[in-house]
Image 1 (cartoon, rainbow, N blue to C red):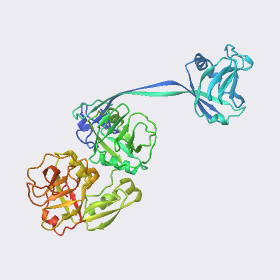
Image 2 (spheres, rainbow, N blue to C red; image 1 turned 45 degrees about the vertical axis):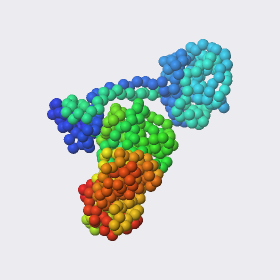
Image 3 (cartoon, helix red, strand yellow; image 1 turned 135 degrees about the horizontal axis):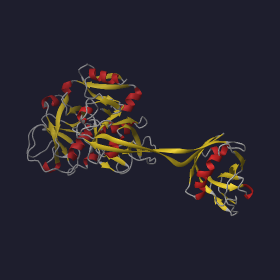
Length: 505
């Protein structure tokens, strides 16, 4: 049997499962897959009619009046070949052609772009199709005679002159499809011939919104993205709204448009649209879904999706200088080494970090440090607020190596402290007071104390004071330094930068 997977036909044995079909495809276990079981397409005639003239084309949308139905069923074949008989400030008249319309000498009002029937000399043997070029009232012999309005190509009415011909009139067609789609993470699902499968949501980044695109890349940096809200119009990811996003490119939010809110309530929330919505200056266009629309359309709140971006993120932090060079070159970016430039040095900083800017510039600086100057830590999962704060302040929220800047250190002092973020620290709610702090514990000063947000590492055990020198009620424990503390403290001075990571390098 033939099953289409991510746009490519695969020949599989009858009764094959989803697991077999998606082998070697971009997919992370536990995320949703869309399986298109069937599709029904219906092509129907709309009430829109395209008029091709010597000056160009315009479209008339018919109303539901009896006159419109008479024109559609009886007069449409009489239109090709008729001329523009006259053009005034108020109307353009096309005709004439014979009809059996009844005479009505009443006066009626017309709006600009209204289409209506008229009788020349109140004689139905000389019937005209009229288009109002301005708001006006008149008696045209066929009653109101209104059949519709010009909706597309209105500028053509400014160019039409007497003698111009209607070349053709044709109805516009509409194609609709009804899909039977199942979204699942059950890889044991058996497939049938003709099924179509999508394993991921593929997004092309918006080049005019580099910060919003980078936010999208960070949210999907593990290869997946969570659906925190799902409505009939959009799904959203609110996993990181502690960001400052500048106003960037705004455009109509078509189906598949990905935006990031840059202002107001919910700043930093990412949206994927299922329905067309108007432009909003508080929404930056971050990208466009180019595959996986069915996953977006059917994913429920609480689910996760595999996400692939074009281009992928271009961040070399955490690699060696040599590996970073290969990685960046594969993306067409030239590496400029700074700091420790040796091949086995670890890239601790990259400038610019932003993927769109790095690709646009074509080169980045990679600042290297010896491997033993990147220190391992473990962050506790017990307090999500403290964990979030620590990762945001150090940069571990969006890259594998974070930065701590020394605020105070002194020989013999039982702790070393690092600068935090006083504004963010206001949200550090107190934990249950500690019973004992051990050497290597990492802590924060919480909102109960004046220096909230300060970060510290304890250098000796204590039952009375935490890593920032605060008493138990003013301390939140956020993790542990699991590397060599003596190596960290050797020659450490105020304002020095310390590089930390949760990963094995």
